[in-house]
Image 1 (cartoon, rainbow, N blue to C red):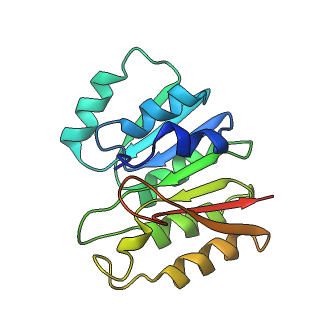
Image 2: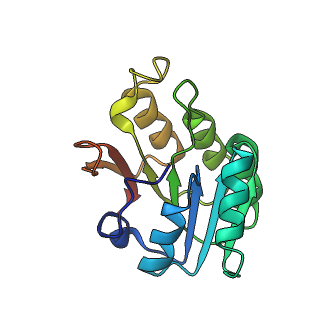
Length: 167
């Protein structure tokens, strides 16, 4: 949804490429462009939202918007990525969260040192009762045991953004 991804939060994790699941209204895309990402990929599963952001960013040749389920479209994006990037995982509804599938997808590709940002961590075990913080941390570490995991406050909640990076 990206409402909590502000420039001050994202700026320390700037690389050339930003990949986002859950475009919503395009706030994450705007923030990524603002802090200096050269290429931005964003995946949205809601056709109405996708259509709106597709129009909004139609003049930005470095913004690539994809319509569909992030569990499938993330693979399409990662297939063409040849350098460590920043991946912001935020595709979910109140009742469904594809997070563990997305992390499994990241694990299946050769690059193992992307910066991974995961939003709405405080909702694990609440909206998404079948996903725990421990499960998410383990899935991240299964990608690369060298990941350091920390948490950042967002405008929504304390410690609501998981940050995984190889230092």
